[in-house]
Image 1 (tube, one colour):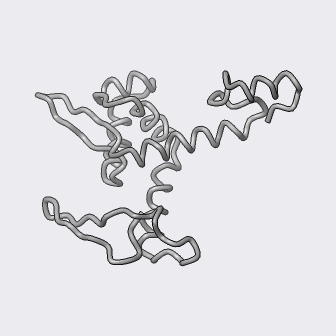
Image 2: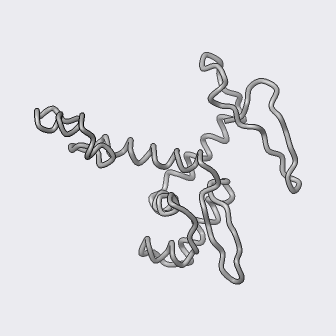
Length: 148
Protein backbone atom coordinates (compact mmCIF):
# COMPACT_ATOMS: atom_id res chain seq x y z
CA UNK A 1 0.00 0.00 0.00
CA UNK A 2 2.96 2.31 0.52
CA UNK A 3 4.86 3.38 -2.56
CA UNK A 4 8.31 1.87 -2.96
CA UNK A 5 9.68 4.69 -5.05
CA UNK A 6 9.81 8.18 -3.57
CA UNK A 7 6.71 8.17 -1.36
CA UNK A 8 4.96 11.48 -0.86
CA UNK A 9 4.47 12.45 2.77
CA UNK A 10 1.91 14.92 4.01
CA UNK A 11 1.08 15.96 7.52
CA UNK A 12 -2.52 16.00 8.69
CA UNK A 13 -3.13 16.99 12.28
CA UNK A 14 0.39 16.00 13.29
CA UNK A 15 0.13 12.54 11.67
CA UNK A 16 2.06 11.61 8.57
CA UNK A 17 0.45 9.68 5.75
CA UNK A 18 2.21 8.06 2.83
CA UNK A 19 0.65 8.17 -0.61
CA UNK A 20 -0.63 4.69 -1.51
CA UNK A 21 0.62 3.22 -4.78
CA UNK A 22 0.72 -0.53 -4.06
CA UNK A 23 -0.80 -1.53 -7.36
CA UNK A 24 1.86 0.44 -9.25
CA UNK A 25 4.88 -1.19 -7.62
CA UNK A 26 6.73 -4.04 -9.24
CA UNK A 27 5.74 -7.46 -7.95
CA UNK A 28 9.23 -8.93 -8.32
CA UNK A 29 10.59 -6.59 -5.64
CA UNK A 30 10.27 -7.48 -1.99
CA UNK A 31 8.16 -5.28 0.25
CA UNK A 32 9.79 -2.99 2.82
CA UNK A 33 9.64 -4.26 6.40
CA UNK A 34 7.44 -1.38 7.61
CA UNK A 35 4.88 -2.09 4.88
CA UNK A 36 4.81 -5.77 5.78
CA UNK A 37 4.30 -4.90 9.46
CA UNK A 38 1.38 -2.60 8.64
CA UNK A 39 -0.21 -5.22 6.40
CA UNK A 40 0.14 -7.88 9.11
CA UNK A 41 -1.54 -5.51 11.56
CA UNK A 42 -4.49 -5.04 9.18
CA UNK A 43 -4.94 -8.80 8.91
CA UNK A 44 -4.58 -9.14 12.69
CA UNK A 45 -7.49 -6.73 13.09
CA UNK A 46 -9.52 -8.75 10.60
CA UNK A 47 -8.81 -12.06 12.34
CA UNK A 48 -11.79 -11.74 14.68
CA UNK A 49 -15.39 -12.57 13.79
CA UNK A 50 -17.11 -9.64 15.48
CA UNK A 51 -14.82 -7.17 13.72
CA UNK A 52 -15.60 -8.77 10.35
CA UNK A 53 -19.32 -8.52 11.13
CA UNK A 54 -18.90 -4.86 12.11
CA UNK A 55 -17.04 -4.02 8.90
CA UNK A 56 -19.57 -5.97 6.82
CA UNK A 57 -22.43 -4.02 8.45
CA UNK A 58 -20.72 -0.78 7.37
CA UNK A 59 -20.35 -1.82 3.70
CA UNK A 60 -23.38 0.22 2.60
CA UNK A 61 -22.73 3.28 4.75
CA UNK A 62 -22.35 4.72 8.19
CA UNK A 63 -24.13 3.54 11.31
CA UNK A 64 -24.35 4.59 14.95
CA UNK A 65 -22.75 2.30 17.55
CA UNK A 66 -26.12 1.24 18.97
CA UNK A 67 -27.41 0.36 15.50
CA UNK A 68 -24.33 -1.75 14.81
CA UNK A 69 -24.74 -3.52 18.16
CA UNK A 70 -28.42 -4.20 17.45
CA UNK A 71 -27.66 -5.47 13.94
CA UNK A 72 -25.04 -7.87 15.31
CA UNK A 73 -27.04 -8.84 18.40
CA UNK A 74 -24.04 -7.95 20.57
CA UNK A 75 -23.75 -5.70 23.64
CA UNK A 76 -22.95 -2.05 22.88
CA UNK A 77 -19.82 -1.90 25.08
CA UNK A 78 -18.33 -4.93 23.33
CA UNK A 79 -19.01 -3.42 19.90
CA UNK A 80 -17.52 -0.11 21.06
CA UNK A 81 -14.29 -1.86 22.09
CA UNK A 82 -14.00 -3.53 18.68
CA UNK A 83 -14.75 -0.24 16.93
CA UNK A 84 -11.99 1.47 18.93
CA UNK A 85 -9.48 -1.12 17.71
CA UNK A 86 -10.71 -0.81 14.13
CA UNK A 87 -10.43 2.96 14.38
CA UNK A 88 -6.86 2.79 15.71
CA UNK A 89 -6.01 0.51 12.78
CA UNK A 90 -7.58 3.09 10.43
CA UNK A 91 -10.15 0.65 9.11
CA UNK A 92 -13.09 2.82 10.25
CA UNK A 93 -13.60 6.50 10.96
CA UNK A 94 -16.14 8.48 12.94
CA UNK A 95 -18.46 11.40 12.52
CA UNK A 96 -20.10 13.07 15.50
CA UNK A 97 -23.62 14.49 15.32
CA UNK A 98 -24.78 15.88 18.64
CA UNK A 99 -24.31 13.09 21.16
CA UNK A 100 -24.28 10.35 18.51
CA UNK A 101 -21.14 8.92 16.96
CA UNK A 102 -21.46 7.41 13.50
CA UNK A 103 -18.95 4.94 12.10
CA UNK A 104 -18.07 4.28 8.48
CA UNK A 105 -15.38 2.40 6.62
CA UNK A 106 -12.18 4.43 6.32
CA UNK A 107 -12.04 4.20 2.53
CA UNK A 108 -12.97 2.16 -0.54
CA UNK A 109 -9.87 -0.03 -0.08
CA UNK A 110 -11.25 -1.31 3.23
CA UNK A 111 -14.64 -1.88 1.61
CA UNK A 112 -13.08 -3.87 -1.23
CA UNK A 113 -10.91 -5.87 1.17
CA UNK A 114 -13.96 -6.96 3.18
CA UNK A 115 -16.08 -7.74 0.10
CA UNK A 116 -13.24 -9.75 -1.46
CA UNK A 117 -12.60 -11.66 1.79
CA UNK A 118 -16.27 -12.60 2.14
CA UNK A 119 -16.54 -13.58 -1.52
CA UNK A 120 -13.37 -15.66 -1.25
CA UNK A 121 -14.76 -17.42 1.82
CA UNK A 122 -17.96 -18.23 -0.10
CA UNK A 123 -15.83 -20.16 -2.61
CA UNK A 124 -14.69 -22.52 0.15
CA UNK A 125 -18.21 -23.91 0.55
CA UNK A 126 -19.78 -26.81 -1.34
CA UNK A 127 -22.34 -24.70 -3.23
CA UNK A 128 -22.22 -21.94 -5.81
CA UNK A 129 -21.18 -18.74 -4.01
CA UNK A 130 -24.05 -16.34 -3.39
CA UNK A 131 -22.27 -13.56 -5.27
CA UNK A 132 -22.37 -15.72 -8.44
CA UNK A 133 -26.06 -16.64 -8.27
CA UNK A 134 -28.14 -15.23 -11.12
CA UNK A 135 -25.25 -15.02 -13.58
CA UNK A 136 -26.02 -16.73 -16.89
CA UNK A 137 -22.74 -18.66 -17.02
CA UNK A 138 -23.24 -19.98 -13.46
CA UNK A 139 -26.86 -20.93 -14.19
CA UNK A 140 -25.64 -22.94 -17.20
CA UNK A 141 -22.96 -24.62 -15.04
CA UNK A 142 -25.60 -25.54 -12.45
CA UNK A 143 -27.78 -27.14 -15.13
CA UNK A 144 -24.89 -29.17 -16.47
CA UNK A 145 -23.89 -30.27 -12.96
CA UNK A 146 -20.41 -28.74 -12.95
CA UNK A 147 -21.01 -25.82 -10.61
CA UNK A 148 -17.83 -24.72 -8.88
